[in-house]
Length: 102
Image (cartoon, rainbow, N blue to C red; front, side, top):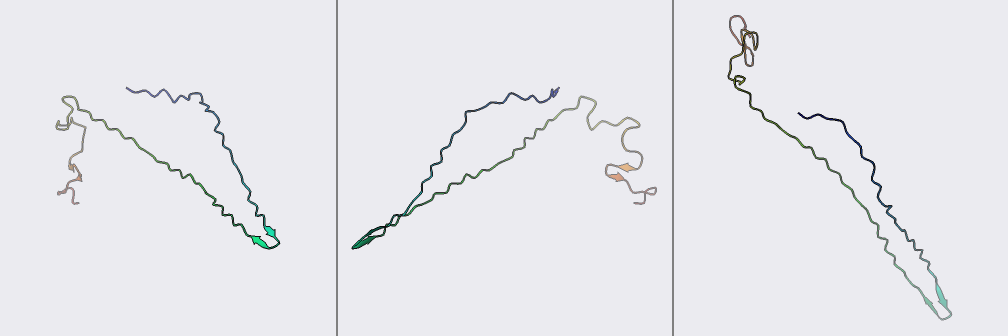
């Protein structure tokens, strides 16, 4: 026999802190103008945007047990008086007949 003694909660486990560093860069365009020449410098910056999708799942565990009735308690045994359906009752409900015109 299984007896549930209640759920116990263990003390928490504290893991080391995960440190993250954010580096920010600022781009400035400096026009360099010379008396006889103008240089245009095009700086292309690609901003890589990262995402971290997260999924969850659920699992259900089902167990089944099967038992064998002890001798004398099988389904093929007749019921004792006072147990089971009364007169005029069939396995699916009232049976038709002169007393039951269903």
